[in-house]
Length: 453
Image (cartoon, one colour):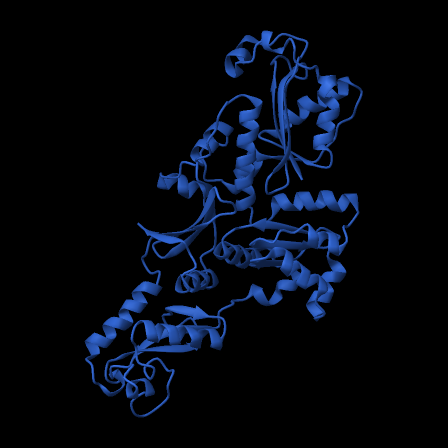
């Protein structure tokens, strides 16, 4: 749980500032679950330059509560949370100073969105809140007021969580839970999971990530881990301390995140998935008559691959669909082994490439149509899919045939500008696995739409 906040002050000398406004949003990593917003009577005058900057003046604060009147509510809403702010050292120092004046020692683990954005978005020219949210297309109202700045920080933090493939942020949260030392029961963990699409992360009592998985129903999948009797499930049950999750809405992004994060974090029980998932590839070779033959073969990196498959049954099923859709010959796609014409020709479902009844040019044009549609080479495209909620969409960016990454965007965000889209993209590795995940997804037409550019 995170307490994301912003504080406005009177200005003045170090450690002599008074709080004039505070906004706190309690955020569970997915949505805001509580909030507290209040003007505060600092019992001292506001510096003129601060009045000009924030619009808060001394008159506005006469009837506002004093800090001691809201201190209990601040402790309640931030209790057990990681303290998050943009330039956290300032807000945390000011809040601790106010509590110290009341004789209370306020302590919390904190995260700074300035430092996180510098690490996770190093390409940004400025990491000030105003310039950063503008570059990321995040709408912002009431700049230099606690509510506006805190809400913008929530939206920024949400984006940083998306970009954090190394789980720097989540690890802080897990450390905090480990320090408390009370592990929820497996049943409680399972019941706290959503029945939604996303990626989940299982941690042991030392805060070490031991397993990453994806599912269209996270709760159901976690239940399978916690009730399974196979060797891996029993090990996970013995070691699981806590589970976190990230909703993706899109199954495609869940697959891409799972593949990338397993390779980066190398959890102990994902050993098999650290390697390439796709051992069979579809390539094309001309036969002695010049007809292009599609062939399923083991991947070896030497042949030019059109697409790949994780199993022989998947490959054959895809080949049957491809052969039917593009009116190809089952003999020339390796589905029907014979020295004569294929069976489909006998029942008039093949136009006779197997016996030279149609020209090489006509047949090869169909094969080439399939290759063009299923190869990313030199293509620029955006795959638009559903997001984590109704007001959101997800995008996957492919530039010049190279997978660049994915992003979620609110329908109110200003992402008409391609540069803003590139700013919000979570950069990802372009490897054989992700290429084939994308090709498989496009082949099965599960996406909402593709925009070519």
